[in-house]
Length: 462
Image (cartoon, rainbow, N blue to C red):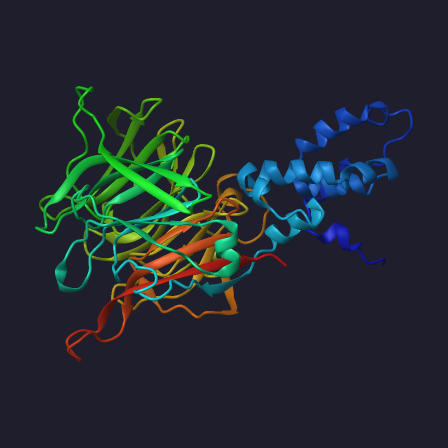
């Protein structure tokens, strides 16, 4: 028996019925008479496995099915336009597609911040927010040593040259607004930041909504940010109740989705809310999504938009203080939650339950889980990716969960309640701060400490 060609085993094979259906087209068959652009359009409607099967039928289809133009379109279809626009162009698109599909490792780079005299840096903290907007890193709030809740905003231009030098130059904005807090949610909507809720230094939960706008002057390397309170009074509906340690994400590039958290009485919540914003982000309207089933009450979990109308909720701490590792999918079109089930017999083990982790959409429309802590406050330094599409659409795209191997570079400490955000290519994850293991001064007073390092996680594409 002949060995299959390498191209044919690039990805998992489809079932035998599909392969048998793709017979060699005869000269008189309808498919042989189709124009090149028509065949191109048909191939774009097929899963990758079927495109590879087509390539094996005849020379004409092979030339088309292996063309760079087709694989660029397939890359954009499956992985998204932003990652495609940011992808390196030294390699053919088919090879880059395979690299993304076979993602299995990370490499970490510690970013140099300079000395305190040369460049000021954010102080160590946890439960803060870190976002990338308009090519600029924005860090806000969090808790630090002594029980202080910080109100400072820090910005750093994350240009290509800065990444090459592995250096970041922070600039501080001390405006006093929003009020200092931790456990808030902050998302990117277009060129704006939208911040909601959190817990202030008096332990009071908030339900205010703020808009941040970044201005970047690339030539001068100067960045500025201004905050303003969003007017949500134009609606008769009440906003969400005050809360902290909830989860939030951006949906449809113009709305904010939040879930759960800890309410004013210390009770964990399970409600779901959507913030609709006007075109110029001048006004907003909150509305509650009432649907069953829905994720049970929790805090310290994550909510991540992974494309189209799909949003993924993972982990957190439940109302009985148990730490969770369940996965829920929210469809913003029909406003319904569904819990995703996994066949653990045919896949690698799922990540252990965790709270205070980060979850970001990375290249390949996968969910990247990093760090967090378990019910015994054992912090983690592991990286996992979840192929949500293969679960939701029941596609044969390999195992759902995959633990990524650490391939070297700077070895980050185990941490929880850190800040994390991903760049436009989906290949780089910025991580800052969090709670790490260690002793604070005076020695022996605590087994925890706040961290202030910033590092870059690179997804290795072989």
